[in-house]
Length: 131
Image 1 (spheres, one colour):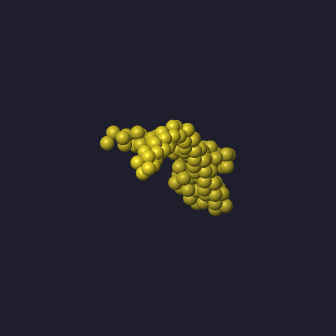
Image 2: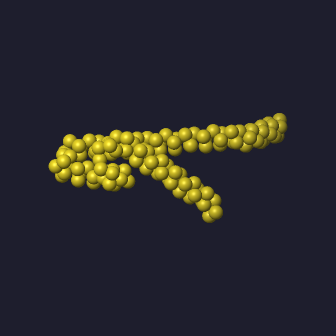
Image 3: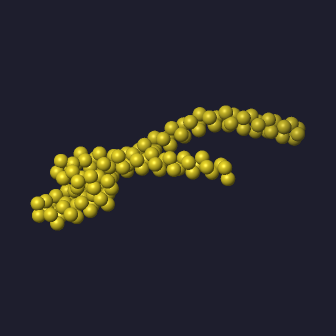
């Protein structure tokens, strides 16, 4: 039972870290793409989440000052910003997993050498008993 706690803690921390990275990347990318074309209140809502961004795009479409072309540009920017956030979080997660794999491989050869030595001694004992 106690062995599960580090796994649960690691999973929760991983989700928190990668989720924060995704959210930050989304917000930064969306601000770069359309930050200067939206009022600050609309930008704040749009950069909060993908749903918020799509909701703002729907409002932009109904506003005669903006129109459907700018609404579509915002939808495209929301999709691009989210894709960039997912790519960034996935790359970071992959790098962390690769580093973890290298650490495990660096530690495991000692166990592997012990296993090989045990196997060799068992093979010699078996060969000796057969002779």
